[in-house]
Length: 184
Image 1 (cartoon, helix red, strand yellow):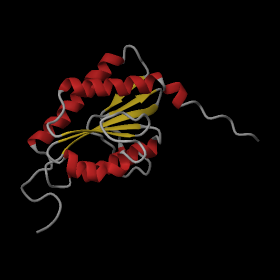
Image 2: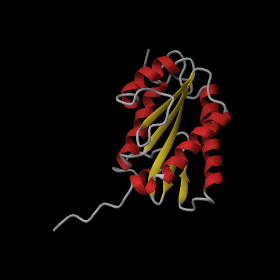
Image 3: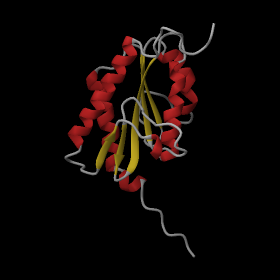
Image 4: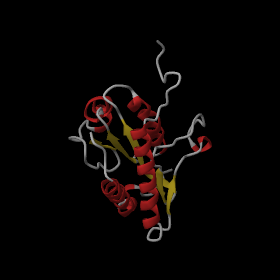
């Protein structure tokens, strides 16, 4: 038996695809509700590989990336995990690229399914809870993990994305001040 995605199967289950589509559409909806208030806000569904350091691969968190005043401020990922499997292991690529592009980016993951509190929590624990005290809360400038076995309703996803985005924009000047000129 070979590893990876087996012949005749697909990486997307119905629940996984539904979660991806839901969070993508809601992120886009939040963007549309905020861009008139914050005209320097951009929502980017996919960062082209030419913009990624090294240019080897694009970066496409499931729900896109928000940029404000030319800085990537937050990205949203959606992962569905059954009781078994390794779907969550692909999380690291996008999260690592975003962290390279902006070490202060807030990287938010919505994780649901029967494996949310097992496989996902165990796989991502070191990247989300070390020194932070847990999951299901937003940690500005860090990785935040929201878990649910059942999955998230639209209102919850909208509220979390809007809360994160608003916080990032309102605190932008404090978090991303221009570096001072080094002494000569």
